[in-house]
Every structure is written in C-alpha cells, then in structure tokens.
Image (cartoon, rainbow, N blue to C red; front, side):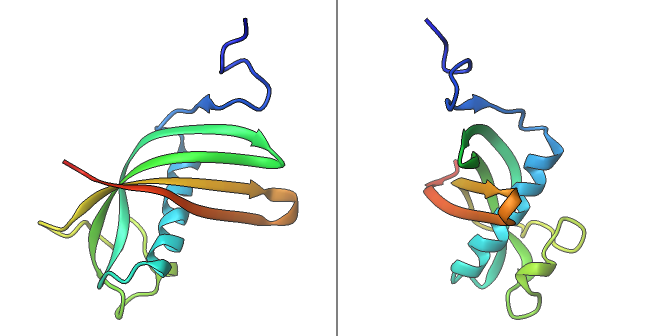
Length: 121
C-alpha cells in the first residue's frame, strides 16, 4: 500500500522553513490585502504548515499566521508591503489563513484562493 506521500498527485508535506514558500506567503498576502477591507495591510507572521500537490501545474496549501501590520492601506500599496517596511501592529488582530495557491509557471499563472480563516489563540 502506498502512503499519501508516495502517491502521484497526492499531497506532500513541505518544510515551513523553505525560503520559496515564505516568499509565496508574502505574495498570497498581496491578493488577500486587495480583497480585505481592513484599514491596515495584513502580513504573514509565520508559515505554520505547507503542502504541495502536482496538478496541471503545482498546487500549494499554506497555513499562515497573519497579523495586522502598522502600514495603513491609504499610505502604502499592497505591492510595497514587505518585512523591511511593515512591522506587525502591536495589539493588532491575528488570524490563521489557509490559502490554496495554484501555479502554472509556463503560462505565468498564479492564483490564490482563501480556503479558510480561523481565529488565532
């Protein structure tokens, strides 16, 4: 019997320390910030879990601890939000976002879908 990790097309756990996946979590926040009506930009605090699946391209499921940043949306575009110029807002709201990312690099395609939002304890 094959394990889920050995199945073609099955989900594979990924390292939360992977630099590319951390960058992907920042790109996911750009899309989330554009959809959110929060006064402040949201930012990834920590990548909690990650897994990947080969589909028509690559699909990732990222579980991200997200917090409000000190950067107001009316002062900074979502394109310019990064760890260097936005810090987490002290006492700001934190949530856990589960985001599905679908990539087809040969088509320059990347799509982000919010699967779930949970309150962080």
